[in-house]
Length: 306
Image 1 (cartoon, helix red, strand yellow):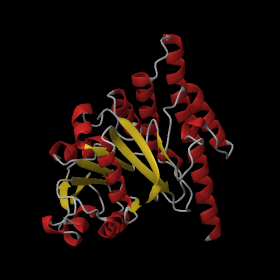
Image 2: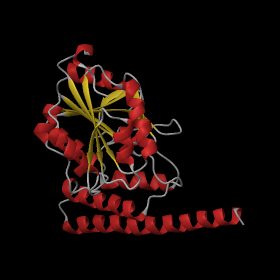
Image 3: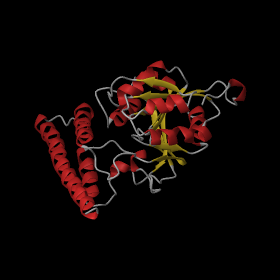
Image 4: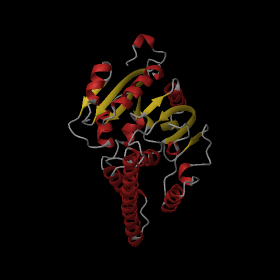
């Protein structure tokens, strides 16, 4: 999966595509296969950082994709740590952080690199991300959540509705616009911006590190841009029932608390304590709800096989 120099139309442009894996070799295969037809004209290196997958994912990559640069880690220290392993070794003009549960459409990466070449003040770009049912992954274009927008977002989700300003409903799905943040499943960053801003914050094990990074890019004067004219698919490969496991649910809420304390402090210690306590209260409620829903699903499955 490395383009030869003779085939380049833009030989001065280099790209590292970084994929962090932990299990689900089936999704990893599909992702890497999609890159075969989506590979840009730039000289491209694909790096897979495996977080000690328990199912032999690293062996699959090594055996079936010999041109991929594989790094085997001996522990699973999260998304930020693993991506940073690759980013530290990257000296390319651009780096694409890509989730293993994504499929990239042909022409998407070339298009975004063309935009970055024309607009040197853009530090990071994302594209339109479609979920498995063809609807927009609304995290592809986000505003930085405040206490109010976050509360509205989770309340509407609980009611089965959307419309929070957090997911930027004012921006058409196929539009191009500056946003506060794009989705960590597909983040194309300029190398010079990366070196100016720094690596992902490794205090986030998973979740919110993309929001944190986008804020830091923007504070350093770089634009973060959503381009809905091109597409990738984000299948969100996880448990089939859609219920977040307790460990991941814990990491999600831990990251939200960390993000709040780093970027959204109110100036009032009382309010800050209340917000963090509310985050952990939500963790407790969601854990209980998910446990009850999972138990109900298990009972229904047992009944159907009786």
